[in-house]
Every structure is written in C-alpha cells, then in structure tokens.
Amino acid sequence: MRSKRDRRRGGLGAAAVGVAALGVGEVVAATRGDSLIDAIGRALTDVAPVPVVEATVALSGRHDKAVIRIGVGAGALAATIGLGVLPDRARTAAVAAFGAGAAALGLRQATRSAATLAGAVTAAGVLGVGLRKQPRGLIGSLATAGVGAGLFVAARALHRDLDRRRDEAIQKVGPMGSLAAVPQDGLEDEPGLSSLITRNRSFYVADVNPSPPRIDPTRWRLSVTGMVAHPLRLSLAELAADALEFDAVMVCVHNRPGEGRAGNARWFGVPLAKLLEHAIPEVGATRLVTRAVDGYTISLPIEPLRSGAWPGYLVVGMNGEPLAPEHGFPARVFVPGLYGQYTGAKWLAELQLTDDTHVDYWVRRGWPSEPIWVTPQARIDVAAPGRAAAGTTTVAGVAWAPPHGVAGVEIRVDEGEWRAVDLGTELAPAAWRRWRTTIELPAGAHSVQARAISRSGEVQDGKDRAAFPAGPSGFHTVTVRV
Image (cartoon, rainbow, N blue to C red; front, side, top):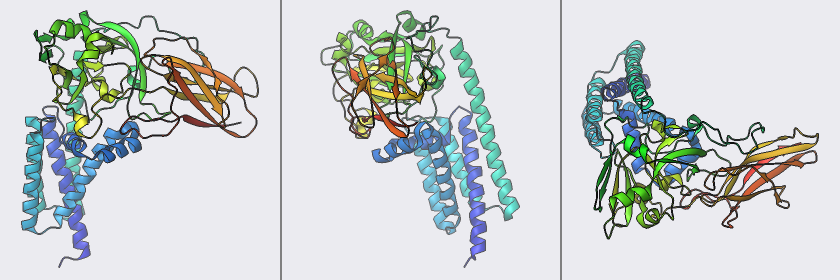
C-alpha cells in the first residue's frame, strides 16, 4: 500500500503531467487559431442546465468567460490527479475514454475543427504516456509543469499574432457610418453620468463563445437562402452600400436593475425588410433563421420584420466603425426593443427562411420560443452632493423603453412619493435617455429608487424577478449618506 507521502508526490506528478498535456493540446489547436480549453468550455456551456448557466452569469458578471476557462483548467487538473492514483489498467481505460470524448468534442458542429481534434487527441496521448511515467520528485514535477506553462505562453503568442492580422484586415474595411458630429442632450456637464453614446470598447459583451471566430472580410459572404424565390449572396461592401444609421440601446436579458449589460450606440445596418423584399419569401415561410459561422441560431418571425412593424436591421457597423470581433464582425442582426438574446446571432454566415419547425439554441435549453421584449428600466449612475448649492444631492442616470421611447423618469426617497426628474433631449425613441435632478436630504442614510415610464404607458415593474424565463425586473436602489 502506498504511503500518504507517496500519494502526495504521485498527485503532484500527475498534476504536472496534466499541465503539460493541456499545454501540448493548446499549442496544436492554436496552430489554426483554435483553443482546446475554449472548445471544452463551449461544450460545457452547451450542455449545462439553465440554473447552472444563470448562476454563472449572476456570480461572474462580465468575467464569465474567464471563469469558465479557469473552471475548465481546474477541472482538468483535478481529473488528472484522480487518474494518477488509479491502478494502471483503470487509468488506461479512463485515458482512452478521455481521448474518445476529446475526439467527439473536436467533431461537434459548434466547434468543428481539425486543429481542435488534433489538439484533443494529442493531449490524451501525452496524458496517457505521462501518467505511466510520471516525473520523479519535486524538481521533475516542477520542470514538467514548467514545460506545460511555456506551451501555454506559446499558444497565447500564436493567438495574439492571428488577432493582430485579423484586426489589420478589419481596419482596411474602412468607416461604417459616421460619428463626425457627436450627439448632445444637454447633460454633458454631469460627472459620472453614462455617455449618451457608449464607446465600442466599453460596450458589454454577451454570448456563449469563449472567444470570437476569426473571419476574413475579403472572403466572407452573407447567404440568404431557404424558402425564397431569389437567393442572395452579399459581400460586406454590398451590404454597406445599402446601410443606414440608427440610434438604439441594446440590453442583455441578464441585465438586472442597476447593472451594466446595456449600451447605447449609433448602428449602421440594412433594414431586414429591404433584404426580404429582394429575396421574396415563399408562401409558408414564417421564420427568419439567423445562423452564425459556428452553427448557433436565433430565429425571428418574418411577418413583422417584412412589414416593418419590427424595425430589424442587418448591422455591419457600430459608432462609425466596422463591428469589433467581440460584437459580431462582420455582421449581426439587431431588432431594437428585443433583448439581445433574442435579437439575432453575431458572426453571421446565413439568413435562412423556413417554417415553424426550426428550433433555436436557447429554445432547446428551455427558454421561451417567442422573443422577449425589453421592459422600461431606469438606472442610477450618480448619487452625490450637488454642485449648485450646499445641502443638495444630485441624482442622475439613464433610462430606456425601446422601441417606443422614454416618456418620463421618476425617483423616490425612502419609498416615499414618486417625483418626476428632468430628461435630456431624446436621441431616438429606441435609444436610452439620460436624466437628472437635485433633491434635498436630511442627514443620515437614505434609499433612492428610480423608475422609467414608456410612451406606450408601461410603467417599470418594481417586483424583483430573475432573468429566466421572461427577463429581470425591479427598481435600481442606491443608498445615499448625507
């Protein structure tokens, strides 16, 4: 029987082998711009129960992708340590099972890649050999782990080089729209208030992909297929020629009151009604499937898009520039007023017209099949001593109620009466609207809440509700100490 000390040394050696195996797999996958860890993370995301996904989003916020990568790495090391203490025969069977699973992962529709497959199989081979001949002693284990860490650094360098080439290609695309005249609403002098237009680098990112795919703009084409009389195949330049600018807020379905998963931008896109007019949908076509390059799909009903009741766009630009890779370059679909999860896929490859038999990615996961509309919401960005007079407190923020627009914003203190605030000039009904007011508060701690009212008459719901399955609700509440 092995002593506790021997088992501890064996666990350390197994962990070192795990680091080396993952490093080898990452380098092999990185030769074609892929990542073994990201592929495993995407696979876990695709099969995780909705409560697990919701908890990860709620706890990790904007760092969800980093949390998934760390979780994959930690889980792989833990599994390797467990394999290291198994008898030889059981260990061989477990490693073989891992290799088979890794091969299946490389052939998945969403992550299909010869490089990912090669990386997974190579990692399994290194793992099997390494566990049979584990490094001896602390020095051997550290050296093996060091080799693995060096391979991770090399893989990261390969990815950076590919990202640089991709970014250079995107820059050559040129402007997409214009922000020569920065819009103003009269509240530019308020420190801490969100910008009227959210900068591209500050705009929230939400998707199931650990990293954006790399797409060559010169070779990319958007296909319009399915139940159409006139199939289309359009380049980025052809789409840009028919695009127009519009201002709108985009909101993630996981954006709870007060959070930052919302942004306001000047978009550049082709009206979907115009594309459908050229394609000519056949009788029986009821759904427009937006399909990403990796197979991810979101579908929308055709009729309201075709009639213009839903002002949908095929977006190719954002704030005067091409879409950034993380925001869907070269094209995405956006319907102002729908939550981001329902408005359309990023990294588009195809628009397919079909019937109601199509089932989307999130519908298979348990979310409702019908799109969910953004509800009126107000966010407090500023709650600070006023600059106009002593004893006053300035409260300011943003509110949205797309597509109809914000008719009013109200605040209340310590759950008292609601009072109206001053609104900035409206940029567009689908855009967010900034607001501000000053209030006098006695000394002590006070609770301040805000709510938005839509032009359609809808008043923000103050009942706290989780995102799943109909979107979040509740009032943003801050504490002010005077």
